[in-house]
Image (tube, rainbow, N blue to C red; front, side, top):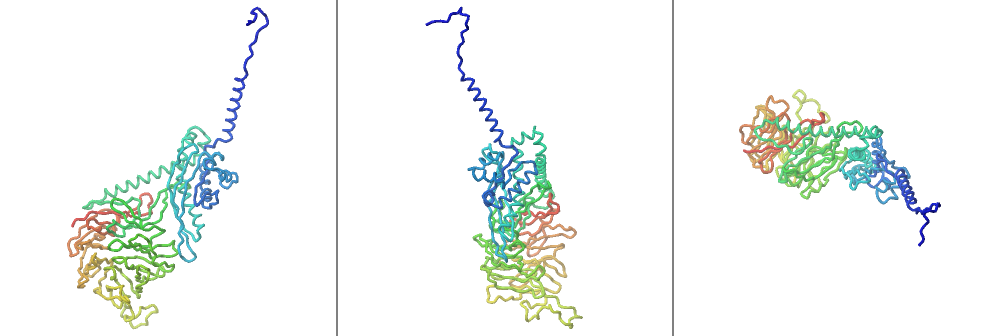
Length: 605
């Protein structure tokens, strides 16, 4: 082994390896390439891809989804976001060639995806020329492409039009779009990436000011509306001065109608509403849902029997609660008289574009349905009875007079109050009769000269009214109802001796007059028949009505509610231990709108 000469003046150099330098250069090049890739492919923090499946995706040819996307994109852009334009060929290609929406969003440099699925249900109503009702329900989901799970908000809506596609278009661009933007904006603005920008990026702060203003207004007004309803509920409770405790059922914003009671609870027609803040005006509004007819229990359980555009007048329920009859308003194009049997399935007995049905009531076991029918808005009512198959059993015109009520005594006998046309004054009795004068008495179905109670056995062939009792001179009866056994009838009474209530025993025709100082209406028997409950407005009370009871044999009136709202339409539950009724008031958030709550009070004889 030889060593170098240490005294040699020529320096001795050790050859160095070049790999660390190359490695550093490769790393620097890789970092530069990464940042260049990030610069060219990183998502824009305010860029949003809208791809909601509504009868399919817009990039797969769904027109409703395209309209919904266009509406949301326009709103998002106005509010400071940068939506991906639907319809751009490059956008369509990215969506069609990607296996997932996040993959497509990355290609399009979108940081957020607004997606979800809305499933439409199309109902074709058999009216002249056709009419389509469309309902949609589902959820809107907002997700950042780096997040594992989206924020999901349920939405639903409905619309109608002559053509199916038109109904879908209206629903997509109006109701659903309004709800979708309200559902999407809060999760977008509250996401950490946007929240961070809003804390330091001046450009973002300026651009997203409209969106932040909308979300702030939405949060504030929805909170204020909720507080207003809660305060209103508290005021109602505090203002009640009645002798018994009142219980309110449902929400303060409800617009419920009480239809009856039975073993399943109490029957209600209702129109659900959803408060929202308009992104256009930043004002609180209400979205109206489809109307429903449903059974509710005191514990809050609900069984929906029917839902649709509109229930025309009040539905009726059989005495045993097994059958419900209602009138469907098919968007103003037609009315349908519909029966819901024990199986819970609605069946349209009659669908007519010319006739208007109202006040339907099924017989005791639901074999027949009686209702009023008229051929125009101002035409007089005729009395109509059909069986469970829709076959007409009776149609009786009012013969120039009017019907003052009907009710079923049992499953085949119908009690009818008919008031004939008033006779002309004595001075004119010899004059020529006008063209529209009523037929002579011997040609009438109801040949009476004064208001008369008739009983019709609709199972007879043919059904013929039998006069039971004509009213006394100057007497008038209305608001008729029968007891559970069909043995007695209750009425509102107007009589020269005084007004109040009257109870008629059918077996002997005896009428008991119950004179009451005040205005009364809507009497109902207790299950055992010993008591009546009714609306009562004491003399000098003003416009408010209270709920009262009194014995059917006569006795003092017991007023059970005392408040500043209008309480009406009371009815005993099937046990006789509670009385349900409607309690009216004004919506604290919408002064022009009235609310109607279902309420109940205990009853002890």
